[in-house]
Image 1 (cartoon, rainbow, N blue to C red):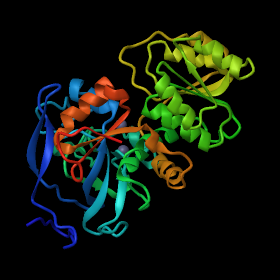
Image 2 (image 1 turned 180 degrees about the vertical axis):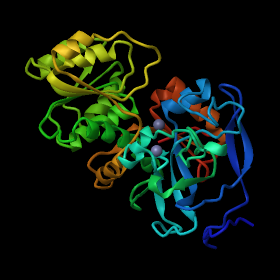
Image 3 (image 1 turned 90 degrees about the vertical axis):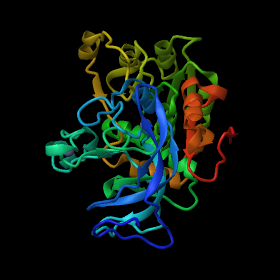
Length: 387
Ligand SMILES: [Zn+2]
Ligand SMILES: [Zn+2]
C-alpha cells in the first residue's frame, strides 16, 4: 500500500504503488516502463499528472542531453523521466504540508532551488548555485523536474510546494500546462524592468515563449508590441494574442521594419525568443539608445556579437533562465482573468502511451503543431486528437 512517514493521503484519491513512466535510454530513445510512485518529503506533495506539454527543451534533452543534468552528467541510461510542463491534482501531502489540499488542481513551475544559496535567497531560484546537486553526499535538495530530477512524462510526480501554482476550475488541463511558458515570458519582462506600460516591445521568434511573450507584454500595457518571425500561420496567432504589428523576416528586413513601425528610433525593449544565429546583433539594432534586450532562447552555436555597437549605445543585455521570481504566479493571474487566451497555441493532444507520436508532431511541426499536450487519462491511445 502506498504510504510514507508523515504522508497524508485520501480515500477519494487512491494511489497505486506503481505507475507508467517513460524513461530516456540512449540519445533519442524513450521507453515506456514502470516505476514506483514517488513519496513526498517535507515541503513536498505528490501530484497526479493530468496533462503535460512538450517543450522544445524536452526535444533537446532527449536528443542531446543538456540542459538536463542527472547525477552531475548527461541524462542517458539513468532511468530518467523527462518532461517539465505539467499540471495535475494534489493527491498526497508530505509531512507538515498545509498550504495545499488533496484534490486541489495545480500547475507547476520547474525549478525548486536549494533555498539556501545566494540566488535562491534573492528569488532567482532558476539560477540556483546548487543546480543539479541533489544526489549522494552533495545533496542540496535542488529539484528541477525534467532537468535534474524525474519529470512529467509519467503518471505521478513529487513537487516542492514552492513550485505549485493553484489554478481555477474554469482553466482547462491543456491551458494550465501553458502557465509556465507564459511565466517564462513574464520573467523576461520582469527582468527588463517590468513597467512596460506604454513602452514599445519587439518579440523575435513566434515559438511558444515568443507568442505568449506578446500576450504578456500586451497585458502589461506595452504599446506597440511587434512580433517578428518566418511563419505566417504563427504570426497570425501572434496578432490574435495582441501583437500590434507582425513582420515576416523572409519578406522584409526586420531591423528596418521595426524602426519604420516605431517612428525611426527603434523600440525600448526586445525579447529575443528565436535563438537565430544573428538574433543578438539584430536585437541590439532594433532597440533605441539605452534600450534593453532580454535573451530567452538557447542558440545552438556561439555567435560573434557587435560589442562596440552595444557599448556606444548603452544597450543592456539580459540572459534569463526559465521562470524565476514567482513570475509563473503573475502569469497565472493574467490567464485566470482571461487577459489573453493561451490556448491559441495548443494544437494537439495525445495519450501518454503515444508520447513518441506526440514528440514527432512537436519536432517536425506536423500539421502546424505548436504546443502538443499528452494526457494519461481521457484520451484514447493511437488516435490523433487535434483540437
Ligand atoms: Zn519548457
Ligand atoms: Zn539555490
